[in-house]
Image (cartoon, rainbow over the protein chains, first blue to last red):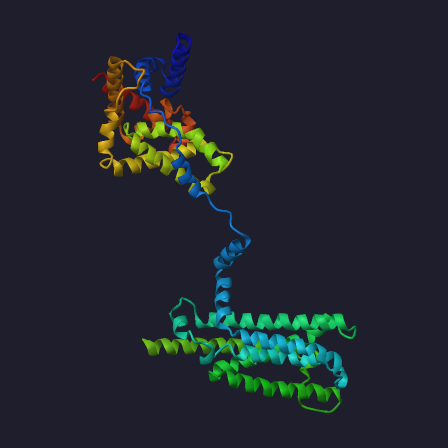
Length: 285
Length: 164
């Protein structure tokens, strides 16, 4: 080290010591100690290829779009529950619903019913109700023992399944309505939706309640069919101006009542499921 | 990858120096701890707040590594420490100079080893790594006043130890 850089170094150390101790005298006393400290140099070392390779292995990998989606689906509990129920709900149900509603479009276009009745409006509620009837019951719940051990209430599971099946039927019916509206100027999408939405919600809730009450999907199917026939009859009789005590729910009337009844029936079904799980756990305990 | 290589290239030598002195002159342990420090930096890079200076953050991690790692590996590396202390001279050094230097280095290393961890860290960060008082305060998460008092006490103690 030449003299000038040596002096500069010493000046710098002195300045640091004055800043640290706040006293020139103390800095002067400690200067020799600090100079001795500085004489201790570490061994020369360059980053090795092994170190860089080890660090490179730790670099976060850029996730593919599919991996990001999967990560997101796995991080939202509600979506995770829905995803688990997709495996439980029979795929055949959704396929049958899609097929029936797809068939409803040409039938509606070709078939003329009295009083401008739209077959799709009559069909959509029945399709949804039949699907919903099969989401509860021993046959629909092969992994019931597993479900009971999970930190999920059976009510939550039932709600998830209901949302899944009803949501799918809702989308299918909306798609069929949209197709009708596009194919014929006779119908508008909004008007069709208004006609089938309330009956669909009511009939689905009735099917769910009956299935949970009887613990048998077929009971739900039978009662839904019976009520559906009655409601269709009420609509067709009203369309033909025939006096009847049956309400015309497919004519766009009674919507608040139908939604209210549906809410009550779903609440009843959830209560029943909760009671049954308490009973099962008591039996097991 | 290029950014990582540049980061390592830029800080590796200084970090090894810090850890080498913090561990009382244990080269093998210092290299292990430097690798662990970089790994922790990578894993916690999301917590680094960009406009803040990087060096205090790096040394905060390194100081923690040195404190924890040195304690647990003290015995494991005892042999390596001896080896380091007894390493041979470089080709361009005269034997008598080497002996004097080694003796001087060993005295400094021993004196530093006898300081408590918290004093050793501030002395090394200030007089070897040349961090500012504010940077040391940020790295060790202590007030600047505490940094100054630790420096004063630490240096006084070193002065006494090196005279003995």
